[in-house]
Image 1 (cartoon, rainbow, N blue to C red):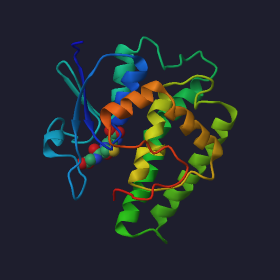
Image 2: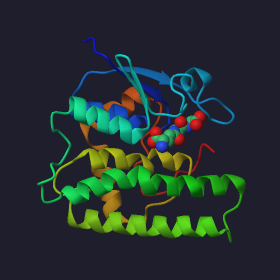
Image 3: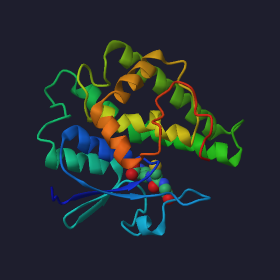
Length: 225
Ligand SMILES: N[C@@H](CCC(=O)N[C@@H](CS)C(=O)NCC(=O)O)C(=O)O
């Protein structure tokens, strides 16, 4: 089917969740895949030149070229979702929905990326910023664990866009910062169930066919960095 929406997917990156979002919504999209460049694993110039930000994800919709995960989520949800995967303001769990929708890239992922770059520099002890990031991550995972102890999904009984945006930090990002989730049985149960979703399986197969999704509790053994 011809369609205007194209997802520019950098493999082994957070653009996987835009593919997944479209699969969950059942909307048509074109997919263009790009590989990270060795040895740094940065995006190729062809990808960088698509949008001034140069970072993944990037989508194109007619004349619109858009970067930034949260902006892309909001754009696709507002334009194409017909209310699917979104909770309305009057829903009793709207606050949970909106919190976890923004927590993923507002705090969880920046915290993990801070720790990841500290690890690359070999600077993991004694640094003030590193300690703050670690403390915040710990309280983040404890809160997520508690929420998933009460409900099957982050915003309650139903799967929403808040789940779709949150999973990358718990899965593929661990190829770059190999951390364990063994202390968090509810998060592990959640990941197992997400891994069974047809839309998730389809998205990962289309975008990263060579990757076994990182859904296990144990830290990946062979990090990419
Ligand atoms: N806040 C941005 C972060 C984007 C970002 O850092 N993307 C990474 C992939 S996970 C990237 O493009 N890395 C490759 C590179 O910088 O060359 C967003 O959510 O879109």
